[in-house]
Amino acid sequence: MTRAQQTISLALLVTSIYLAFALRLVPLNAKIQDDIIPLLPLWSLVSFGSWLLFKLGWGVFTFNDVPQAHKELMAEIEMARKDLKANGIDVD
Image (cartoon, rainbow, N blue to C red; front, side, top):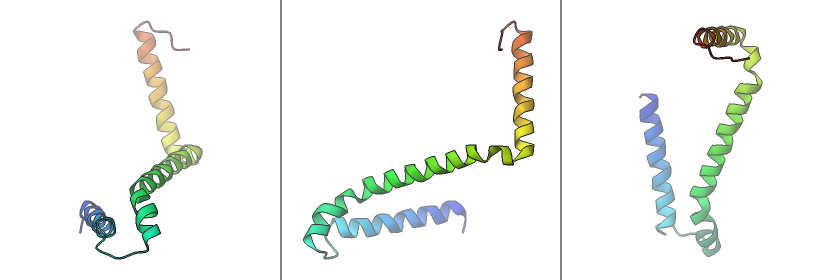
């Protein structure tokens, strides 16, 4: 099973479970049904965004721990500066 198939399968499973609760096919306490279930999509979206921001921040924080990628990026920046200077653009 490919990664895309696993992701789609998991998304369908979670969506099915959520719809079973949202359409009241699974009996729950009225407070949970009315107050918590409608907010689950928003909560999951915020949690997913927070996780992605953490991963991005961690990647930036540990960027210097990858010397080869750092060297490649610095070489590309220097090459871009040379190209811009050759076109008469000051980049300092």
